[in-house]
Image (cartoon, rainbow over all chains, first blue to last red):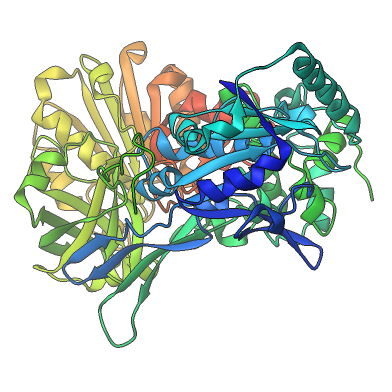
Length: 340
Length: 300
């Protein structure tokens, strides 16, 4: 279902939607964009291209408690999750959420993720690509599912995709703001928008054939060269919408035998990532860890699901302090450009 | 708050795959100087029925406050109601496990992993090759086959260890030599006791004593230290056992056991759900399964 809404009505709609839960959206503070809890539309920055951390942090927080334990056993900590409406999520990030959904909700459903996913309404918003966006190469520049509502800004009005029954329930809170009357000029405006968006991309990147190129380049000196620069800081994993790895620790309250079992974000760039008891490290070399990260995104995932586990958001391009990212790695492998 | 969205039923939490159940250690004794044997029974008797597994699968074991790690099951599902583990004291959690005594409890969840393809193996000859700690998971499949002996063909069990004192289940396996429905061949790299009655030499020397086997009809099950694989595999492939019938069970760091935490990833596979049992063809095809590394350029 696609509806039409006047631009000036968005604020009224979001105020009404707050009846469902807290409203969160992208805000800019000191030049940095992140999701914050907001009271109204006016506090949001809808022109910002990307937040530092993707919305995965709402569905799967950087650190949270899975269980409280005492000597008798483990009791799960569930049910205290706040209902949130996440407004302004871009297509690439919704694709990232879909990849997380596949991992966390299919076999062995993760109840912690499921609960947060359930209590988070995703309202997407069209975006303005910048010089780091590469969603055209990952085919994630548009989104057809995974959201409750999606707003495409066509200057004079919004086209509103309704993606779920509960998204439709939000519409029903203010049905007078929406119209089903899509006219020829609206379709033309949308076509024009797509052409404009396509023209905005500046990155030169091509992910076609990556699985074969990775296989062929398994022993390429490109990896050692990149490893020579990599700091193993793991920032790429923290900002990547599809990095899901986590570690688990038991935290004991001092002087007792009670405590919590906590789960927190991990990165395969960290040296201890593959260490087993006894000290054997399956990926001791930095080049091996770097290759794992990129192999997972651009070879293994494509082999299994037919598309990369990169959604083209450009955060690795934005974040990596030494310019190791999907663009530089895929180009280096394609061209066998070893560099200095 | 008024419920606005009728479709939003507060989904009930189903089984939490991360939640350990408490099991009580009922037997515990040393197998070697650094490795203990544990037998555990569930505190909640129903858990024993729910925990149905196949050889080659593993469980996540917790000690309250110490952490959690994956351990293979050494018991056979043909003997239900209890689980058995062999645990070597090599780290923090295993160190704490070594200190546990009978009647103390541990957290257990599972079983996880694919396990050995027991149904496919029915009617086939089975050759088991265990090196060192590799006997821990392979004991499960060995006992299972012995308990279901009629379902399988010829059974050969090869077991190598560094020294007699390092050999897991030494007496148990030596006793199996009395049986006439399987062949047990054992070796130690070095006999430091002077009392060792079996072969001395690396495990591959036992292949000379195996005798003729019907290779196309044989499944070989292998587990041992990484260094062992290369030589054992060369022997098995040379003998003519098909690559997809040579199976091994692998070790990786794991934090979840259910394909979420990422640590055991190898290309597009997770050792925890796609393994830990892989075939020799998987290893040749996948790289990194047994850490051959980028420098390995062998073709066959």
